[in-house]
Length: 206
Image (cartoon, rainbow, N blue to C red; front, side, top):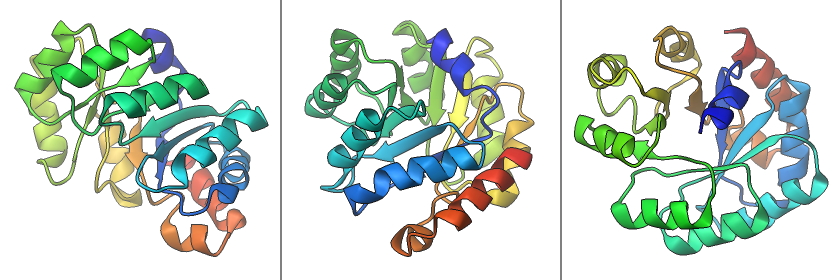
């Protein structure tokens, strides 16, 4: 997990993207890289998701390829077969953690409470996703959960817009934040790669 954490250091925002068209995956990844972001989290929320993930993997762009909304053993197996760089769960059950361990896929497990955070420490994780961040109390809640658990680092995700990024990054336990605004639905639908590149530049400058 330490290796994954190091790879994400210096990336202010990991774009969280839901693709409706798999053909958009590679141009999207290229646009993000042009803006200085070398990581992406593609969510498993649409039928196009896995084909888009495979397309980025096959393109060999060097972008850190993450997959989000991983919620079952089938998802984990598919990600392992593709060879993604990491997976992200919105929440984490013992069954899901077991499947991840068996597959050997690097993961950022999702937590929303102190009890869940401790459970992830017990499972051997030192880097977790705090989700949904803003709806779950934001920075105040994140500090409260992380305060006694100094061994944990966080990737808060959920409701974090451009204006909130820096305040989250200023929390010492936060490595990076997840955000959908970098590659929003409007620009994706319009295939406005230049706008996405500009958003990536903005994210890296915050």
